[in-house]
Length: 114
Length: 109
Image 1 (cartoon, chains in turn red, orange):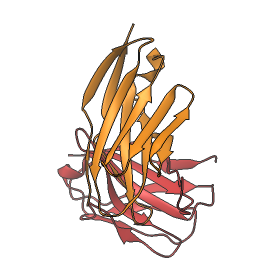
Image 2 (cartoon, chains in turn orange, cyan):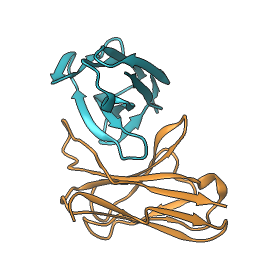
Image 3 (cartoon, one colour):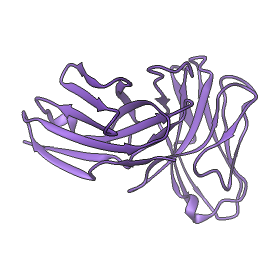
Image 4 (tube, chains in turn cyan, red):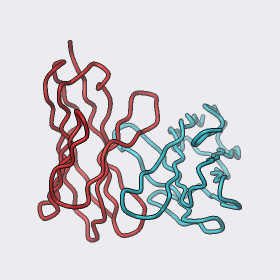
């Protein structure tokens, strides 16, 4: 593994189903983030984690949950998917040291909820 | 929260220069980032400004004026591969970023 990986690449899901999007990084970054990207709205932060064991809510957290059991993994769960959660989801990580603290993004998961 | 504005679309000719403006409103500015995103791909880091002035990196330059809440990304000697979306992002206080909706740049031959 090099960088950040996400799985699945794409998924079609029936409304009401539970779904977990996976994100793994091998850069030993402290901070990790989940964004959704919708046409005309740009990237919006769903949840974040500054370090293993802690999480926080972003701009659009409703309907989503996250956990950070270790440094490398940051799964995003949709407990009961709704069509408005159709989007492209990006996971990102950073060193969380301030300054030019660049966020590195995974390849994304394209989710369609029908 | 933050209000980040950038133009939706811009078109330019190969070899030309394009300037993408970004204005923002924030109460605790802690850095401004520009990312490039090709269609169907992940955003990738281009530049970072935290102090006023110009940062140059090859064909790309980024400018910041904190007092005006204003930044621009300058792309010189445009190439076809520069056709992409360019995202302005502001960090306020802690390490989270707020992104603008992005500017889609189309380079024509």
